[in-house]
Image 1 (cartoon, rainbow, N blue to C red):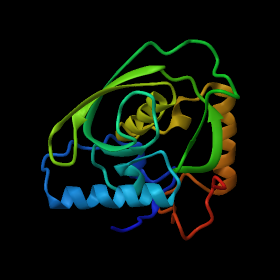
Image 2: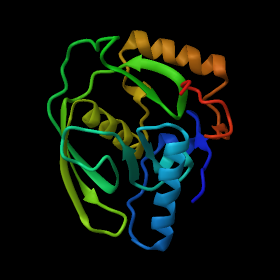
Image 3: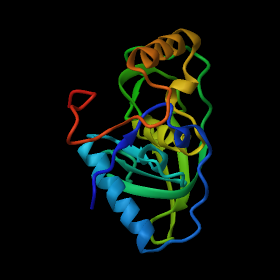
Length: 190
């Protein structure tokens, strides 16, 4: 297993729809193992393939949950069904997200409280489960990456402006920027 560099906002693969996984083979399983290793090294709760520069529709997660779902898993070619997202402004204390591809920054975002996830595991076996609360938020966040969206693309105006200001300050928004989990300082201070 290998820890891979994490792409930063501005890398083209992060901003386009990822393609379906068509072959479930040893190469895919090796990619999944590397994604788990990278997520662990980054102290992440989830990692989508575009975040390591791979434009494929899969993500891994690691989060202790109350939904009777294994704490760690992978979903290949996921389909999400969501409950309604509240139209209320996000609570800046309760609804704050961060992203390994927008490292070190946190912003409030309203998400659905429930989601159903359907897809496949790394061997092509069906996966179908429900998630609530923060676990549902994590899965929505990772799924967005597969459609070329980062959570900062969903922020309400005042937080979107702050995020863009920080991106400019950091010099993000251009191709070729990465950070290396386990080597570079942890941008979230874990």
